[in-house]
Amino acid sequence: MPNMSLVKTPMPEQEPNVRNKNFEEVSLGYTEEMAINEAKRCLNCKHMPCVSGCPVNVQIPKFIQLIAEGNFSAAAAAIKETSALPAVCGRVCPQETQCECKCVRGIKGEPVAIGRLERFAADWEMANGTNEVAPVESNGIKVAIIGAGPAGLTCAGDLAKLGYDVTIFEAFHKAGGVLVYGIPEFRLPKAIVQKEVDNLQKMGVKVMTNMVIGKVLSIDELFNDYGFKAVFVGSGAGLPSFMGIEGEGLVGVYSANEFLTRINLMKAYRDDYDTPIRKGNSVAVVGGGNVAMDAARSAKRLGAEHVYIIYRRSEAELPARQEEVHHAKEEGIEFLLLNNPVKINGDENGNVTSIECIKMELGEPDASGRRRPVAIEGSNYEVPVDTVIMSIGTSPNPLIRSTTEGLEANKWGCLVADDAMATTKEGVYAGGDAVTGAATVILAMGAGKTAAESMHKFLQEKFGK
Ligand code: FAD
Ligand code: SF4
Image (cartoon, rainbow, N blue to C red; front, top):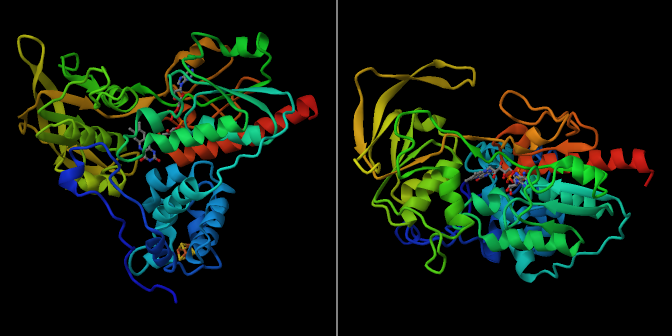
């Protein structure tokens, strides 16, 4: 019997007032019964509009039908045909603007909970499946991947499946990119990312951490001295931007990247780690994206009484995922919308004491199509805070392009690559945030996939294997 409920089967979560004091996962996932119940809401549409909304073309009706039949292992296998990181995507993909916004059940009522079902199938497979990874015979051709984020991991996996001898060079001491240093444990448990990395290693992929390419080795050295025949650059966009306002050098001002890296990668929230972090009582987070929500919710969990999101547009323009905004509000994050910081004030010791904001109103749409925020003159006021976290965007680190001759970047510092992800230097491919600037996990994975196909074609033409 199909389930004609107009609303999604709810997913159990930790209570807001409990979870805002711990770093454990907020959403607890479907039980088998809940998953089957939700899967029965899918109409198995012949024209599959949901698939057209998925950047990696997951065969959505197929895997959902398999869940409805109780065949969870086959459902996970169906997702894995096109997606390398289903347990990750099921948790962090912006489904409401991708697959779910195309779902016909969303015309009258809520769409099918595709993300929750993807997460269920992937988690079920991790807990109950054999997780066997078939070893692949090597063709002996060495390929280097720079950066172990979703773009690099996807590219590495696809090339390893084709028989290449793949080595990932990662600057940090752990593989995973933003999935381990940016997105907090309460949204994406790190054990899940580690399992994906372990699977790659089982396939024969070598992961070399603490290897900053451009410092320890250059791309040219990888080609000339170490025998790599092609290189993929998936180095992300880890360079934070600041507003350029007075007071950004005060003690207690962080970039969101630094704040989150200390917490997630360096485990500053745990007593058994020595990583220092400021546990502010009143914290301002400037920005309205996923990164800002993660920083605000992390600051709350570190014990802050007041955490403010300061964003210059209105709620409708907030770029963060709806679910993150909803969760942040439930957890007590205060939203100062249509507000823009103009100055950070400090005391005689250089510590932050307040942030001065000006109120904004929305004018005509700008080049991005969103209504331009306009300052209301004379509306300045101060918010007393002891910590400020700047979360207004990031761009690619210039290290790789500045140490690699022939690699071109655009005016934003993003590497120039064509549709096949080929850069301006022969044998060097690039994708993910290194090319687009800060984007999404699924787009980074899609780029890693396309690059792997192009590299395979290039290497076949060059070496005939
Ligand atoms: P990254 O994940 O940044 O990985 C790049 C890797 O390259 C890093 O590990 C870095 O250490 C390494 N590296 C850099 N330079 C070098 C070098 N010179 N040598 C060797 N290694 C190097 N997207 C979503 O879809 N949903 C979300 O909910 C979401 N939330 C986010 C929350 C935060 C806090 C952040 C920061 C981003 C979020 N994103 C989200 C965006 C998403 O995580 C990124 O778009 C995605 O991770 C980009 O993947 P990537 O592989 O291109 O780069
Ligand atoms: Fe199922 Fe919705 Fe996709 Fe139709 S559009 S197949 S109902 S998930």
